[in-house]
Length: 291
Length: 325
Image (cartoon, rainbow over all chains, first blue to last red; front, side, top):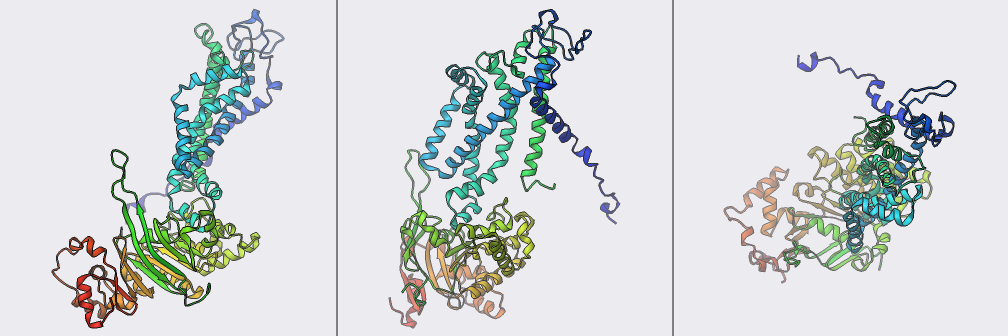
């Protein structure tokens, strides 16, 4: 009789308990995406309508015959809840579009660079070095100043300033994988460069790239906020979580709710994306699956 | 002439592969590493040639240089009369169909993100064989059967298989395009001894069945003993002795070959006893007495088809055979 015989078989906790974090994250993101899509019909007030008489109202204030200001109002009397619902559109678009754009551009350049090696690698990596040597905010401000304010330009500038991160990671992976035996095997079979890059290197380089991308989504939301705060991102008439956070900061001591609720929205989005991307990473990696 | 069966399928002429040494402080390379340093070989259709030697002797580099996975520094690799060294990468594809490789580490040589079906059918797709998916399915099932794996294996991923099974997948992949030559680079050295025999028997069976030219690279002589028609012994980038399996195992002439044989027991008590009795003793460290001059000595025919590096002791011993210089 050994100790193993005495120990009861480990009981697995129910599926719902094991995946509680994933469920919550999924639910939050679903709500966020739905409210972004259905913003027009969900908001109790026009998020841009100013009403100086009802400014800086605390959360929960309500007047007869009007919907309650659930999350209060800002210094211009705009409803914070309506602002958050409308602002989710910009924040989510910026967050995902920049990551997808920069991820595709950076990965393509990095993988070609790492597999091709030689002069092309030198040229591309010096380009990356030059760009990374610039302080991000300086480069972004400069480009926004040249291009002008606007959603499309914000996305474009964030793609241009963040692709080198993906290029670096993708290149390192491609360098590592280009000497792996299964890539040599593919060459011995007669596979051409496009096939090797797409079928052998890219799928095996994805794991770290997905991790980088997942961490970048919240970062892009914050960068958009920073650019808007500095007055070169979105015009202040456009609502995003970033612009709300920026304007509410000045009133933090008198009306904490103006900056706090958009901040909570950002934090919850970041957490949800991180939890889900970790689950995605585990699912994508065949060596971690079913464990 | 192209398909003349007397003509060797592969002829390697004075092949060299030098790697630049590590860079010094001022960017200059130090002495080059001469991984393969002037090798001549021939391989006929349906023949198994074993290439043996210790780690670092250049045998794997030679295998890769023959397949142009590492471009040789100089020399010729004549495959069916065509010198592959001059063929550009793009033009290599049509020759790759005819020569395939089985790799050492079955855990590293299969893409972990491709199903077994995709792995085995990839060469078919690359070379445009078996146009439709149903044809490919049939061919993959045929190949899986040939390497004794169930046809259900196609839907699974490499990680679900043991080392021996993975090596079978690698062999099926190599055979998919019906090659004429296979280079097996230490194909069994990463496997358990009990599995090694199975894989060697499999390689041997398909080699006979398909009349393949087989270059079998190994460091373990007891593995080679069963399957090789001829054996080439490599040391420091050169072939130091080459001959039939019987000549190498029963009548080794080069001191390095003897050293290798001493290191590997032969699973035949009679031969093993003879060999032990004949083994030279108390010779000190042979390696340190192997000079550059000895390394540069040409091959010398001690018996028909049995060539040995012309070291003074080899030449002296060879006199009774009346060998030609």
